[in-house]
Length: 118
Image 1 (cartoon, rainbow, N blue to C red):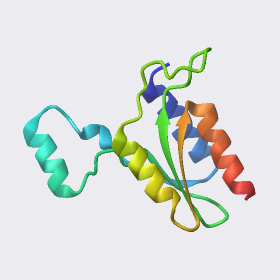
Image 2 (image 1 turned 180 degrees about the horizontal axis):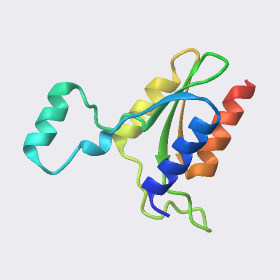
Image 3 (image 1 turned 60 degrees about the horizontal axis):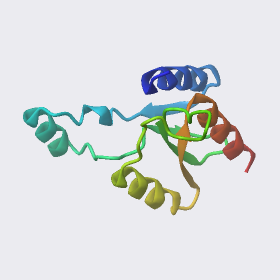
Image 4 (image 1 turned 60 degrees about the vertical axis):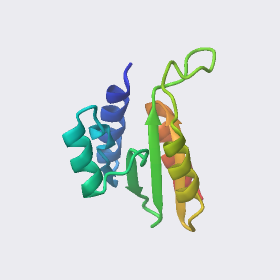
């Protein structure tokens, strides 16, 4: 399964469970110089997490969605960039904010449910 398929499953699950969320289209960082420049000027930041979710308990959750791990725990080529690591680290240091990498739809769902229990 590709990342897009995980993203659609996760977004549908969030909608079905009445979450308010936003998917940040950072995939628009492209090879085309004019589009990359436009995105940068408009404030698109490389590495920003894919999802910002308002949890029902009132806090924020950021999730960077990656392809699911393989049977042996590998990432199947879904690499985490230094920029993604920096964003997750900095956002996770803010009070009442959770920030995580999720490897696949099931892990993303589990993170949301665990954060709701806190």
